[in-house]
Every structure is written in C-alpha cells, then in structure tokens.
Image (cartoon, rainbow, N blue to C red):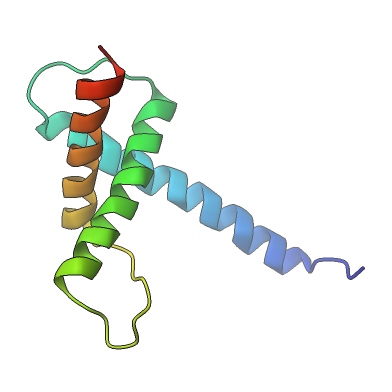
Amino acid sequence: AREPDPKERSVGLFSIISMIVVGFVVGALARWFYPGAINMGFWATVVVGIVGSLVGGVIGGLMWKSPDGRFHPAGWILSIVGALLVLWLYLTYVAK
C-alpha cells in the first residue's frame, strides 16, 4: 500500500476544519434569523449548518442547472436558507 503524502493529509484536515467553521457560521446565522430562542450546542449548530449547506446546494441545483450536470455547493444565502429549513424540520419533528 502507498503511504499518503503529508501534503495530502494536511489538505484533508484543512478541508474538515473549514467545513466545521463554515457549518458553524451558517448554523449560527440560521439560529439568529429563526424566530424565538433555540437551545442548541456547538456541534448541533455545526450539523445544522453543514446539512443546511447541502440542502441549499440541492435547492440551487434544482433552480439553476449546471452545464456539466455536476453538483455545485451552495452560496452563503442558499446555505442559510437550507439551514433555516433544516432547523425548522428539526424543531418541528425531532425536538418536541
């Protein structure tokens, strides 16, 4: 088996850290825009933000077809819209 290049490993770690940071920012903004107080921890906020970004990407893909047919990540606005949708579903069906 081939040993992974240290540069490849650091890029992968940087991608995970950046995904957590972006997920937290998107989740925190969604919690701020959502009416009422929401009691969630750091990791729940990160998960809402990451899943919301994926949902925003799907919404964007449905609205604007990419010429190559590949999935493209959502921008900040659609990520927050997706996180608001995920947050509403979570508060409506899971956290009763």
